[in-house]
Image 1 (cartoon, chains in turn cyan, green):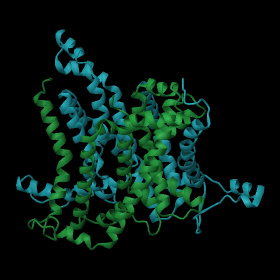
Image 2 (cartoon, helix red, strand yellow; image 1 turned 90 degrees about the vertical axis):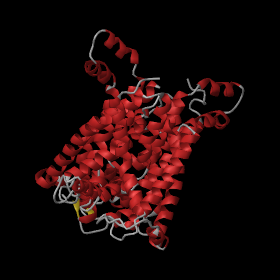
Image 3 (spheres, rainbow over the protein chains, first blue to last red; image 1 turned 45 degrees about the vertical axis):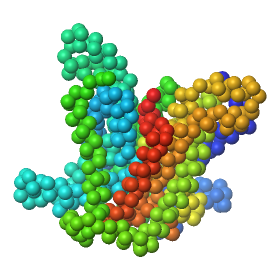
Image 4 (cartoon, rainbow over the protein chains, first blue to last red; image 1 turned 135 degrees about the vertical axis):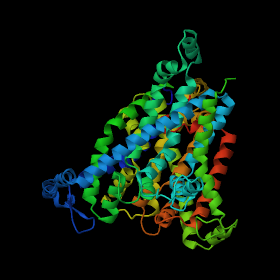
Length: 303
Length: 268
């Protein structure tokens, strides 16, 4: 098919430059994380052992493999701190994704029902906050949720509460922050499938006497399933490993796994443990990531 | 013209209000004269004036901007090559692995990307600083660029390229004379996205940076961890203003709205 000189020097260059870049800076780093997760902590630079020493020849290689162990994984499995941290992350990600779907679907649906001119404006309005830094958007919520912040002012003014409740450092604050930050990731894929939805199908359902809620349930929802799947995966996977939102809004009492990795690494300087926690997290996410990749590639190929 | 029901109108109003209210509150509070962040003390530009004398902050901003310019440009070139490879060159050896490496970083938790790159830099004993963060940001952003450019490449009329080559243009010339002008709106949008991603990033930069390369988000994070600070309201408001102006200008200019269909590759 291609006329751009099949197998030419130029074509090789176009493929190989990004390919080699990704091998070096995406795949190779994972191999290193895997290797370090099988190492021991040591008081040294770098702070782990064994270090592969190729200058020692074959002896160096055997010494290296002999020194690897699964101790870090045993540590993770045996320590309720880590196990709870994983469970907490998955729990928060699952509930937050569900909330995002409930909040995002009506918004996406409403955008898709407006005129094309308004659709362009509304899509831009949904996208715009998402261009500003996540850090800034989370920080904006710290302003609102602090004890003498706007939310409590409003609640007090309406006499809904007598004493201002603490919102920061609670799970509620984490959920608010996540739903807020990830809303565009949910709305956009949903909008894209809903916008393509053939209206005549709904008209046909109405002509045949189907009530609107039932038509939604039987026609709209199933036909938008690819958007739902894309939105859910696009939110769920990164939320599990989220660091900034739980760290700034959730406080340090109920850490999610992203914070655990951060603390093991920067706080405890335990690189092997941090690596092992990261590897387990990747294994946890591998199924949704593969489904996501499959979907994304199919979508790219359809066009 | 489709009819918009009351329910849809309410969903839209609530949704948009939810997205903008916190940002509006932040910007208003940045003009607060009071030192106490929660007490309104009248309008003032005091906190903006304070920023001008904060040398560390200005230094961090300049590092972040240079970093974003460099990594966005590198990511755009690499991402464009990757998109060409995926769309134009059919089934080459290793295509599946290649595509997997493009899509995986889009959803990979940043903590893992940051940690793995840091361990790579330690393993090869690279001096950590500006350049290591630049490599990390380039790698992260190039995948977003690929997805955006790829959708544009897939859309356009291939016969234009074929005509140019039938008339004797070399592949290189065809690319610069035909292909590039046609995909330019997507390339510009992709560059802007890469720039914004680099400017935003806290987690990956924290892992891969070294002494002397404190980026603006790292600086802001260390300031706000322990609570809201009025100067930080002002910094964040400036960043919001700059980004809002850039995005609105660009979207008036081109097809930015559709190009940021994002990682889900969602637009038609």
